[in-house]
Image 1 (cartoon, rainbow, N blue to C red):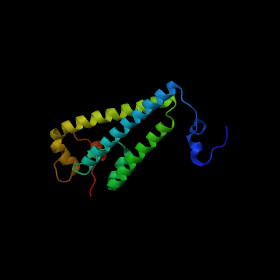
Image 2 (cartoon, rainbow, N blue to C red):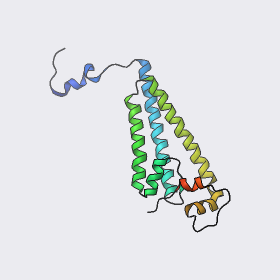
Image 3 (spheres, helix red, strand yellow):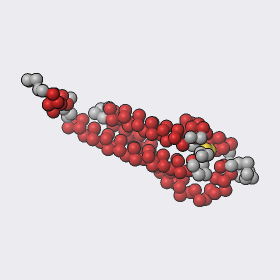
Length: 161
């Protein structure tokens, strides 16, 4: 091959890396689609989390997010959720040609799908729990509610801004 001047070398087949087999191309395409689903469900989770944390609060299962919420900074919660999404999606994208990464992408998608189903049921049942929410958002102003365990109080967080 002859040497090409300037930026023309970027357009040659040799400069673009190895050619994918049809199977690798299909796996790569599926992973990119799964990454898009992961990002959309992750953003929906972030929106729901912020909507409840900034109003009545919610039980946060993730200890890091719970600590950040108790710290009281909305930007920290947003940054944490976006950073974890970015890192996981970046890992999946970098390894998108490998079949095992497709399994990891499916696992992430299924986990976020379960979380989305949880948010749907939480949103549907929220009106049934008005007294519980009032108690958990500020236990000092409400009488003790039957069935509320101390674990629920430990995980309940609300952003105060």
